Image (cartoon, rainbow over all chains, first blue to last red; front, side, top):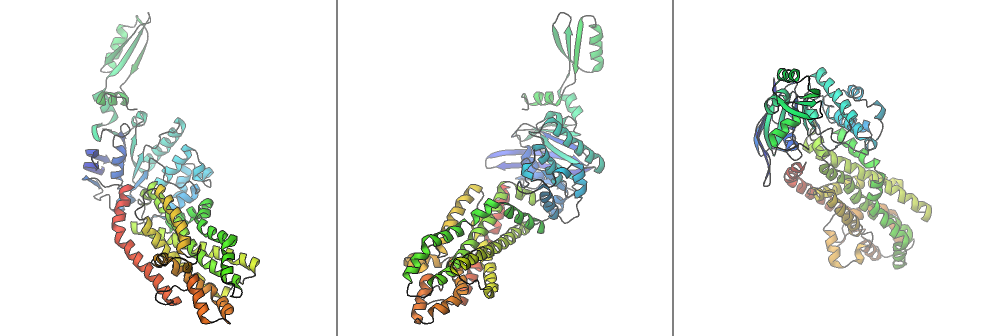
Length: 277
Length: 289
């Protein structure tokens, strides 16, 4: 079911076009990733979708409401790239004062439990580690129980454990509440689990599809053979059957092999001719 | 909106150094007075009895004006910081309207202005009570409280107008230092208004500051003025009032009611300006978030 649609979205800053005529359809319950290098226009797109900036041209519709509508804003939560909470205040003060800014009732206790905030509840936000802060940021974005959560590069600079922990909670939330998530990232591995991926470069969508279809369309599976004599050979193969055939034909000659399906990195490389980071 | 107000209040009162620096202008006037200003003035008014008891509330009046100016500015600075750090973008996602957000900053600032003026009033009052045996007359407290609300409101609106177009925290710092220094002169504390050249006096009269000080001084000094001047001719009293900025002269000395009226008119005119430019500043501010 369609939740959000953007048509011909364009944003110009003075004489620079940050986002150039992009179309998006976000389905309910999906985990959608905007993938692209720094400066590709991901954040500008998110800022337009969240109503923080107005597009130069184009429409955004969410349940037939536009971004200027307050009801629209009530249905979304945003985790900003840079932190927007107050370093001087405790986690409790930060979350509770934000909760009071909404008219509808909020489920703070649930968020405290989910994001493990009990132990840091009374600490000053500014004294927390990067991962702890991110947990609080996400809890803040979920204070109003949104249907759609925007995450603008939330895991930049976080260690792998923290990233995994955050994604565990978010996945659980998606499972429990049907939360729709839009994520911008330049971490390819985060895109790997997405339901749908938009690859953005220089303000344009250069490809969009599910992960498997993108990989199928833009990458080949790679089979590397390591021979007894120390040499190795890299082959591109269409599917596993072809790989098995090659392997059984060469079973005597090879000492080992590696089979790697195409990744999002290969997709990106093949589309733009450059590495994502 | 109460959420934003309580957040803003916590932000101000949690920041000890911020409070200290917002009172800097007031403290400078207090210290300068103790160091040499009071002695200078006592010498020049030596024929008036109990000059010290007269000058202590005079200083309090002016310093409270400075406090109102600088603390409301410091409180409103949060608004600019919030714009720059995208906090405004986040708050804009909540159920508070843009007008509500503006209003919350104003309410916070008025509240902080009143609290800080009262705190300064009691600190200075008690200090002079101990050191100079001045009396801290609590019967005038309702009037002091009333003026503190009025001055806090007026300076909040004034500073709001000033900060409407400020986008950078860097600019904010510069504005604060200018306002902090200028407020002492305009409130007529560093130097009594009557001792300044006429051009400067006229310039001051086009700002709300001297009227604010005059109102405070009228209330705070009333009892002591009656006592000190009861044996002196009325002309000496009017001269004293005029030179010391207890009554501002516009073709003759203004009464307390006239000071009040002028001060309120300033508040109204500035409010209208703020209202008129709010559409422009809103677009500017929101385009930056």
